[in-house]
Amino acid sequence: MSESVVGPASPNKTFWAWTIATFFGAGLGKPGPGTWGSVAAVLFWEIYGAIAHPSPRAMLVAVGVGILLSVALGVPAATRVARESGRKDPSFVVIDEVAGQWVALLWSPFHLRDALIALVLFRLFDITKPFPVRRLEGLPEGWGIVFDDVAAGLYALCVASLIRVWI
Image 1 (spheres, rainbow, N blue to C red):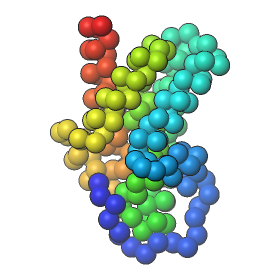
Image 2 (image 1 turned 90 degrees about the vertical axis):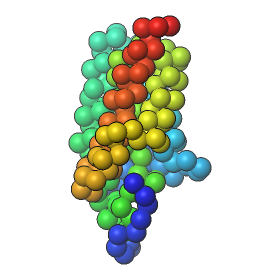
Image 3 (image 1 turned 90 degrees about the horizontal axis):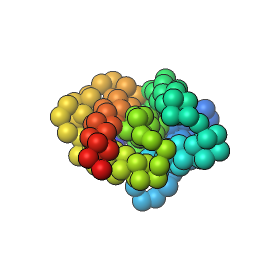
């Protein structure tokens, strides 16, 4: 989605929405806020794994909970921030990249190589938006902002899983 202006920007910012939508400020990184959001998601995954030393099942549950939370909170946050900024899909809204990146990491073993593969594949599919990912951008407001990235994450998850079988 382009960052087209859809109405006047609101002078007030809703703190919780901006905090979630920018993933605690990661979306304010330049250049490429989407990449910063994806990297922040991978770092969060790495830090959790390094500190908690979870079993593969516990990591799967934690990432699943992260995905659910990022979507459940991300859709309303992205909607509100898009309205308040007056933009249809602001580039600084990166909770969608976080959700998609965590989808890409869902079945990944806790290993740096696998994290990097998931990161590169997710960014590739998020940028190129293969069919039907681009069509999901047409969903209303935060739904379109978030779900195209979730779909890109599913592509990355499938390809990363195939790569792990071969290497």
